[in-house]
Image 1 (cartoon, one colour):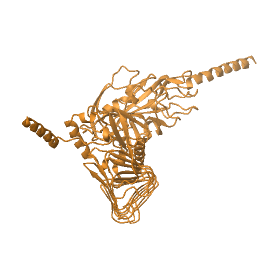
Image 2 (cartoon, chains in turn green, brown):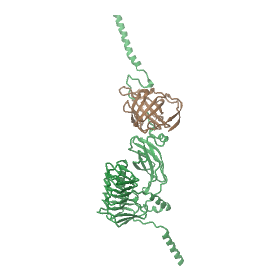
Image 3 (cartoon, each protein chain N blue to C red):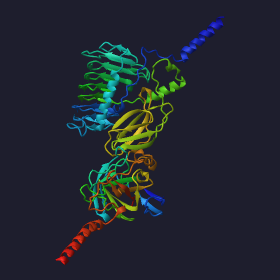
Image 4 (cartoon, each protein chain N blue to C red):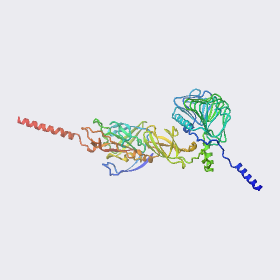
Length: 429
Length: 176
């Protein structure tokens, strides 16, 4: 009997040691905020970007400025000490459509967050707390972070913070990620302005309604700085734009091993791997400013796609999310072909790889078949190009009777009759 | 792009002046610009190009005056693979000649030229003329084996009630 109990205890012990116990979170995992083209930016501002101190570095992302705007302390087209700031693996989108689209997408992201109910309203001071996945509201304070805030979760854990006023950190404050949590899954919606003082170590995508300021001190942001209506000020600041690529693969392996069963009982976001890219198979110009697109399905069961397009290949100015395998892009530059690419999207904001980009519109895509399938050139009636013909002009070529014959008859016969009458009159007299 | 094309034209059409069979080699030119001018030296046409679409009855629209021509901008551009279509008035409202009054005089081998907004000139050679009844003629708009340019105007007799001529004249040309 003792042996049996011992063996039972041993089995239980082995289970504790070797079988991972799912983490217990207070709140279900919110879906990641769809950033669309915002994800391409390390920094995006509306009215100005200022960088008066040397040493600012933006890594792995563009810097964008909406129009009209001023920019100092970065390379041309910015002015001032253009060596103060450096972009690695990014370009300056200066008052162009890319920056404009970025701001549009930032507004969409902020709206997305604003529609989410908070799981918990935190104290205004975040320092000293350890939080797990969830949506949190943070009230206003003179300082929101002194010391460390720890975000604990796995690679898929999403942390969303809604600051109802400003977000202000003390120098030396840090946001720490533990347990595999990723910076790409941290989002800050700030209803006013954000200030990261001194050597703040910040994490996540910061979407500030007004401005973002990094006072002197060498703050670091692992994420993105997005100022919706005003300026961003850097001072010896480092911004590392981070992507979530690792999250998709790690989560997919876990979801495949558990056959999805672990997620069925909650709203935990399980990000799949998207294996196949959609292929654009048809494009037809619908009107001078509209083009119809159709593509093949990516992975089985995926019905949500992101379409990116622009006037040049690999310069994607616009994007749109589509449910289904076709769409019509409207409000395009008249009669200009556009470059298009399509990728599948899934939950957790995962975007698969894009299929081959193609030139669409004007019958140029993919060769003759798409032109042949163009519904706009089928069933078209021949035009009515006629005005009423002038009496003295010939009619069209089929009844090409010289005009002088009927005119000659009309004029000649009365003239002949007059001549005859005149001759008779002269003979009588 | 070099394409070898075998074309066969059936002889059962209305007043077809087409040659029956021909083999030719065409070099397709791709114009990156938008067409702005049509020149047909053999009938002294040098006309600005308007962009036209479809009427409410799904017929090709016409230019708003008798001196310009209209390019069907829902189809391909002149020089692209497919059938670019341009129409023009046969006559003017006040009895003047229309831009395509003499279109019927075009014959096989006559040259047409399209200038685009980037200064590129694309040339075409007349293949045939053909008269249609008003209505649909998909082959005018949708033939896409290579780059074609088709010119359309009115023909036949004027119907004062319908405010329309009884026929349509189409001149088919190929990129040269």
